[in-house]
Image 1 (cartoon, rainbow, N blue to C red):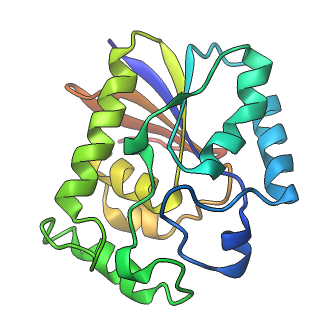
Image 2 (image 1 turned 120 degrees about the vertical axis):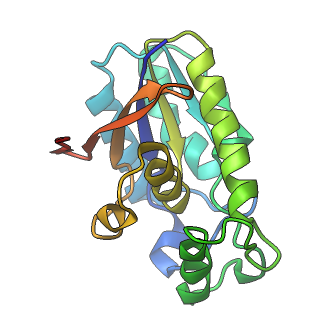
Length: 200
């Protein structure tokens, strides 16, 4: 069954403001700006024919989904597999370089592991399992509130698009990445935020 998936990055957190790598459970709360972003997200998506809302097990994803869940009258389903890539030894660091370099290395060496954190294979396995669960629940469309690095890595792999496409695009808080497809037939990227994506 083809699913339209609205993959959303969470709202702003105190770690975002401090430029810290906050990936462990439960993670920091949304800022007041982040809560306003969540309310704006609800207003933006409430008109969509959404069958379900899924969130990671990090607090910020759940808080981001709360206004939309209230507007739709549904309970958000927690899927730990949607969690951010685990930074391990780099947790709460403000030096992002080693984390980003490790994640980019997965393009050629998916067995490589972030020290104390995820390997490429381990991350993709859990994230794919979460997406498969969403696609298998029988809804024509759904929202999944997740995390920036995780979204970039999974969308690049799922669509087969050049990773450079994603490196050059911002992924701001509550940006919506619109996908369509299913885990077996594959996924098509329809929009990156407000930017429609055309396919030759």
